[in-house]
Each structure stands twice: as structure tokens, then as C-alpha cells.
Length: 295
Image 1 (cartoon, rainbow, N blue to C red):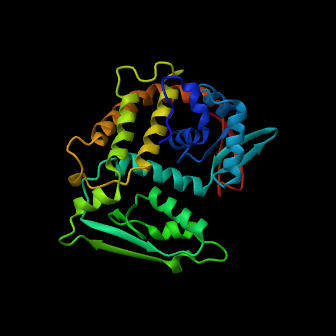
Image 2: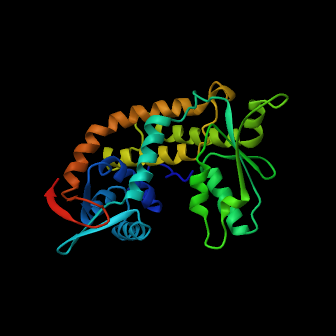
Image 3: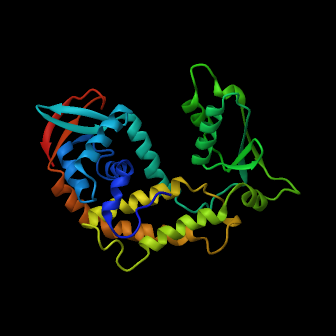
């Protein structure tokens, strides 16, 4: 996981997009509003993110279809597109519903095998499978606990001259003797590496006063949520019954929830003061029909 090291929030400038997505997920998702770009610049200045980096990130996300521009006179406001809402809802679900500890595994595995002629597409598919929680069990065979939406992964990889789904086999199965699920976990996933990422999170956040160098609790809130979401997005969500009893994700999740509750009231107050101007969006968020209102 890419983390901001130490207590200097200025180092967050290296990753403005994840921080911006955290902000949008907390303060914009579900509200039907767009935020004045100047307000976003002011918020992220508190995290050490430069105005140039914020403007560049906003432009890049708009180009990728994650943000919609809304113009009123000479001012530009940014709101969520449908695609961005899907991404942020997925993040919200992972944080508050799925969680970091898989105690409800039903014993099933999703298996993916493929033979692709194009090396670049093979690389992209491997990367997407890892991101979706798969591990390489043996040559050409990837596995993940539970039921996974492999169709969504394949759709995102479809090339104009190659139908990826034609080269992929997806199955669901349960382990049968002599194969044990515990052995699958050990063979397909690097347990030590996953645990190490959670311990790094705890080293940073499980202290009496996390990030004392941060500007305020809004900065800490955004850094906390960004760290946590990036961490659990990399976690394959392995069955708790096949992990060590002192699995650090258990403690890390408790720390996240405790700090999220602590930071929420003061951070919301600060955000309300800093986001001085918004526009209410109506209809399709990409069409830009707006009504100005104060926050």
C-alpha cells in the first residue's frame, strides 16, 4: 500500500486523487451537489496538496469521466458522474458493510483460468484479478474466496480486436479432500505481506495522538479514510477461520472505526466552513444544469 510516511501531512501531495475520492465519498456522495473548485483547493491546502496538483487532478478525473464540470459565470464546480457514484458506493460498502474480516465465508471459491494471446491483456487481467481479491493457486489458475463478479472485470478489459471472455473460464467450487481450504489460503496468498500492511496501518494510527503534524481533524479524517480504503481494497478478504487468531486486521478495523467516530464531528464542522459555495445539480450529473446555493 502506498502510505504517507511519518507525521508530515505535506507528503500526502503525492496522492491527491485517493484523498479527493475520500472527500467526495464523505461530503458529496448522495447529496446531488457540485463543489466550487476554489473550495476544494482550500480544503486540500490543509493536506499539503498544491493548487496546481488539485487542478490537475480535477481535470484528469473529469477527462476520465469521474467528475462533471458545472460552470456558473467564471466559476467552475465539480460534481459526481454516475461512474464516480458507483466507485464511491463500492468504497462505502467495503468500509462500512463488508469490513476487513471475513467471518461469513460459505466455503466456496471462485476459480478463473485463462489463455490469452496478447501479453499486454494478460498483464492487465492479472492486475485486475489481484485487485479483485484473487491469488495465483498454480500456473494459469486464479482463486478467490466466495462469489466474485468476474464478468465485470472482463467487461472492463474488452479490446476492440479481442473478446477477452472467449479466452477465460470461470467456475465456482468447494475444496474436496485431500485439498484443504487452509492449504489454498497458504499457497495462493502471501499472508505475511497482507498482515504487514495492517501492522503498518496500526503503527501509524494506533497511537494516543495520531498524526500530530496534521493541520486539523478534517485532514486526519481524509488521511484515515484514504489509508483504510486503500488497505482493504488490497485485502483478498480471506476466511477468518483460516487466518491466525491474532490477525492484525481485527485490531486495525477497531482502530479505524474508533478514529472515524472521533474525527467525524469536528471534521464535518470544518468542511462546512471551508466549502463556501456549492451548486445543486439536477437531472443527469453530466449535463451541468445547476442552481447556486451557499453551503
